[in-house]
Image 1 (cartoon, rainbow, N blue to C red):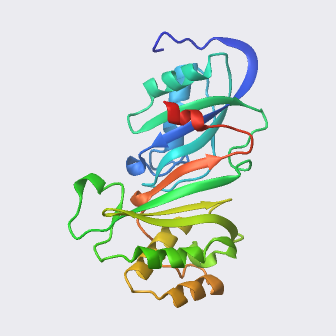
Image 2 (image 1 turned 90 degrees about the vertical axis):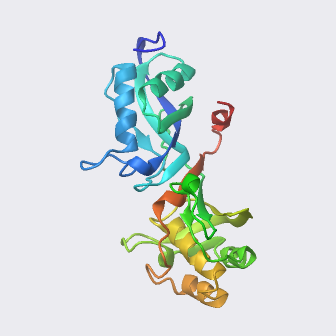
Image 3 (image 1 turned 180 degrees about the vertical axis):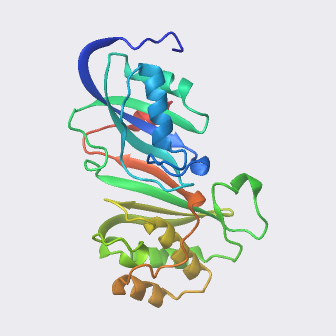
Length: 265
């Protein structure tokens, strides 16, 4: 054990929500897998080392290989009686440098981080410059052609509301109707960000959205054709699929649950 902590127990089970931040560059994704390291695998190893228990963590959502997170939420059941701030300190002592627990809080035993989420927010970052940036190499998609951000925003406005987003997802045989509450495109110097908030997302939805919006911004896809593609809802027609390293899960929000304590760390 580290930091003087011990896995003291009172015999009663409790449920704890953890807010995770991670650099997904070296991982095959958030979920356990047999052929690559995963965020879940590293978290569960740290939990066993810290608490002495073999615990299973459930996540708010799946992030693919190379995708990052600032506000992923995981939940665990434990018999440890340690304070939640001790969980933050103790787990961070065991986790690798590219994963951190930013916040921990006790939650109802029925809490489900995936089903109980009110909305999720993702941000996709594009590095819009002719010359590559080593500092942004693993955090943003370099797109050298000039981008018309106001035109990208006009296209993004069409995505807000409840739509069939089949065109912006992989072909997986699942329902493709989602409700997008916000889609904002903004520029800060060479960085162009696409931030989307929705009740839930389809696989590749944000990456295909970012790729299609970049085509609009570069004048390679008209606003009319972008809107028509959304309306036709033919699977996998929004292209290109922007690379995973530009994507970050920013926040998962829950009714009546305040996870903003993570910002105070």
